[in-house]
Amino acid sequence: MWEAIRRWFDPAELRSVGEPPDYRFSLANERTFLAWLRTGLALIGGGLAVAQFLPPLPMSHLRELIAVALLLLGGAVAIRAVDHWARTERAIRLGQELPASRFPAILALAVCAGAVLLVVAVLVRAIGGR
Image 1: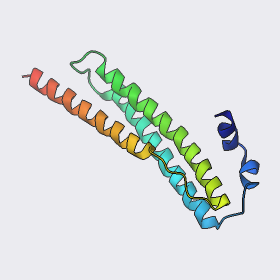
Image 2: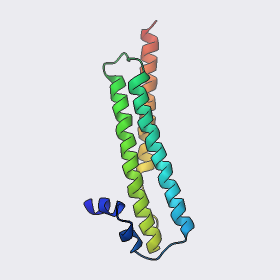
Image 3: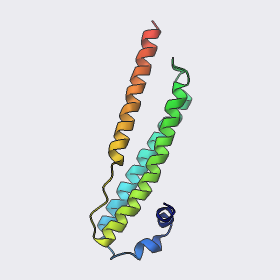
Image 4: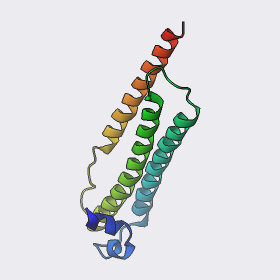
Protein backbone atom coordinates (compact mmCIF):
# COMPACT_ATOMS: atom_id res chain seq x y z
CA MET A 1 0.00 0.00 0.00
CA TRP A 2 2.72 2.50 0.96
CA GLU A 3 4.53 1.70 -2.28
CA ALA A 4 1.46 2.69 -4.28
CA ILE A 5 1.06 5.91 -2.30
CA ARG A 6 4.74 6.75 -2.82
CA ARG A 7 4.27 6.36 -6.58
CA TRP A 8 1.55 9.03 -6.58
CA PHE A 9 4.14 11.62 -5.55
CA ASP A 10 7.05 10.42 -7.68
CA PRO A 11 6.54 11.31 -11.36
CA ALA A 12 10.12 10.26 -12.18
CA GLU A 13 9.37 6.69 -11.09
CA LEU A 14 6.24 6.62 -13.23
CA ARG A 15 8.13 7.90 -16.26
CA SER A 16 10.86 5.31 -15.80
CA VAL A 17 8.39 2.50 -16.52
CA GLY A 18 7.74 1.28 -20.05
CA GLU A 19 7.64 3.51 -23.10
CA PRO A 20 6.37 7.09 -23.41
CA PRO A 21 2.78 6.80 -24.65
CA ASP A 22 0.95 8.91 -27.18
CA TYR A 23 0.33 12.07 -25.17
CA ARG A 24 -3.37 12.00 -26.07
CA PHE A 25 -3.83 8.86 -23.94
CA SER A 26 -2.08 10.44 -20.98
CA LEU A 27 -4.18 13.59 -21.34
CA ALA A 28 -7.39 11.52 -21.55
CA ASN A 29 -6.32 9.69 -18.38
CA GLU A 30 -5.74 13.06 -16.71
CA ARG A 31 -9.17 14.35 -17.78
CA THR A 32 -10.76 11.25 -16.27
CA PHE A 33 -8.81 11.87 -13.06
CA LEU A 34 -10.05 15.46 -12.96
CA ALA A 35 -13.64 14.31 -13.53
CA TRP A 36 -13.33 11.98 -10.54
CA LEU A 37 -11.92 14.85 -8.47
CA ARG A 38 -14.91 17.01 -9.42
CA THR A 39 -17.19 14.20 -8.33
CA GLY A 40 -15.38 14.00 -4.99
CA LEU A 41 -15.62 17.77 -4.54
CA ALA A 42 -19.33 17.69 -5.38
CA LEU A 43 -19.91 15.01 -2.74
CA ILE A 44 -17.94 17.01 -0.19
CA GLY A 45 -19.90 20.15 -1.09
CA GLY A 46 -23.12 18.19 -0.74
CA GLY A 47 -22.03 16.95 2.68
CA LEU A 48 -21.31 20.48 3.82
CA ALA A 49 -24.64 21.71 2.42
CA VAL A 50 -26.54 18.96 4.24
CA ALA A 51 -24.75 19.79 7.50
CA GLN A 52 -25.45 23.52 7.19
CA PHE A 53 -28.76 23.90 5.40
CA LEU A 54 -30.86 20.75 5.76
CA PRO A 55 -33.36 21.26 8.58
CA PRO A 56 -33.32 18.74 11.42
CA LEU A 57 -34.93 15.49 10.32
CA PRO A 58 -37.44 13.49 12.38
CA MET A 59 -34.91 10.72 13.01
CA SER A 60 -32.26 11.67 15.54
CA HIS A 61 -28.90 12.63 13.99
CA LEU A 62 -29.92 11.54 10.47
CA ARG A 63 -28.85 14.88 9.02
CA GLU A 64 -25.38 14.53 10.57
CA LEU A 65 -25.12 10.91 9.44
CA ILE A 66 -25.93 11.88 5.84
CA ALA A 67 -23.45 14.78 5.95
CA VAL A 68 -20.63 12.61 7.32
CA ALA A 69 -21.38 9.86 4.80
CA LEU A 70 -21.17 12.34 1.91
CA LEU A 71 -17.95 13.85 3.24
CA LEU A 72 -16.31 10.44 3.66
CA LEU A 73 -17.52 9.29 0.24
CA GLY A 74 -16.08 12.45 -1.34
CA GLY A 75 -12.72 11.82 0.29
CA ALA A 76 -12.76 8.18 -0.83
CA VAL A 77 -13.52 9.24 -4.42
CA ALA A 78 -10.55 11.63 -4.40
CA ILE A 79 -8.16 8.96 -3.10
CA ARG A 80 -9.52 6.40 -5.55
CA ALA A 81 -9.11 8.90 -8.39
CA VAL A 82 -5.40 9.35 -7.87
CA ASP A 83 -4.84 5.62 -7.44
CA HIS A 84 -6.75 4.82 -10.62
CA TRP A 85 -4.89 7.55 -12.52
CA ALA A 86 -1.50 6.13 -11.47
CA ARG A 87 -2.44 2.52 -12.25
CA THR A 88 -3.88 3.50 -15.63
CA GLU A 89 -0.85 5.61 -16.56
CA ARG A 90 1.44 2.71 -15.67
CA ALA A 91 -0.64 0.28 -17.77
CA ILE A 92 -0.59 2.68 -20.74
CA ARG A 93 3.20 3.01 -20.53
CA LEU A 94 3.63 -0.77 -20.32
CA GLY A 95 1.17 -1.49 -23.13
CA GLN A 96 -0.99 -3.56 -20.78
CA GLU A 97 -4.74 -3.86 -20.51
CA LEU A 98 -6.21 -0.98 -18.51
CA PRO A 99 -7.00 -1.84 -14.89
CA ALA A 100 -10.59 -2.81 -14.21
CA SER A 101 -12.42 -1.18 -11.34
CA ARG A 102 -15.59 -1.91 -9.40
CA PHE A 103 -15.46 1.51 -7.79
CA PRO A 104 -17.85 3.26 -10.23
CA ALA A 105 -20.51 0.62 -9.51
CA ILE A 106 -19.92 0.88 -5.75
CA LEU A 107 -20.12 4.67 -5.92
CA ALA A 108 -23.37 4.50 -7.92
CA LEU A 109 -24.90 2.11 -5.37
CA ALA A 110 -23.80 4.32 -2.46
CA VAL A 111 -25.29 7.43 -4.08
CA CYS A 112 -28.51 5.53 -4.84
CA ALA A 113 -28.73 4.27 -1.24
CA GLY A 114 -28.22 7.83 0.01
CA ALA A 115 -30.97 9.10 -2.28
CA VAL A 116 -33.36 6.41 -1.03
CA LEU A 117 -32.59 7.37 2.59
CA LEU A 118 -33.28 11.02 1.80
CA VAL A 119 -36.58 10.14 0.12
CA VAL A 120 -37.59 8.14 3.20
CA ALA A 121 -36.60 11.03 5.49
CA VAL A 122 -38.57 13.54 3.40
CA LEU A 123 -41.63 11.29 3.34
CA VAL A 124 -41.47 10.65 7.09
CA ARG A 125 -41.24 14.39 7.69
CA ALA A 126 -44.13 15.11 5.29
CA ILE A 127 -46.38 12.47 6.82
CA GLY A 128 -45.43 13.40 10.38
CA GLY A 129 -45.97 17.12 9.68
CA ARG A 130 -49.69 16.72 8.94
